[in-house]
Length: 129
Image (tube, rainbow, N blue to C red; front, side):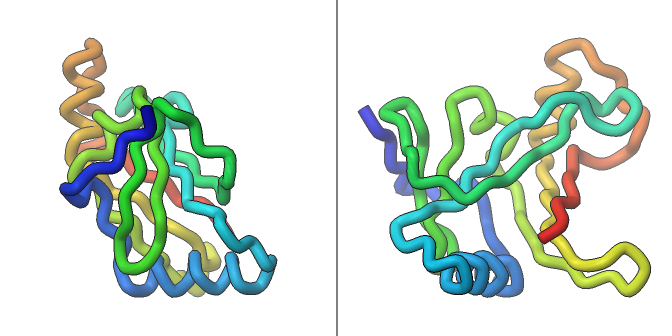
């Protein structure tokens, strides 16, 4: 059964929300959500990177909720890493613009799975638009 969390697990900043809504409008993707997921190993030994995709294929086991007007979808494995995460849209003159995920639980979950803390701070991701 599709889970819909009453509690906001992931926060999209206003900049991230505007960027996602702009992409959805530009590409005419009505009914799509932003899927956020664990995408394998992180920097050095932090253990976690995140990926994002626009998705309209929501599974019964997915968790869905809304943040700043954007529907978010997270799979069962990724949700534990993403509790309390913030997604921002940053514009960096040197690296370009893109999404950045900051999650306090990425570090905690990595430690529980035997990783060392080499990078300081939680897991993160920069996903170019």
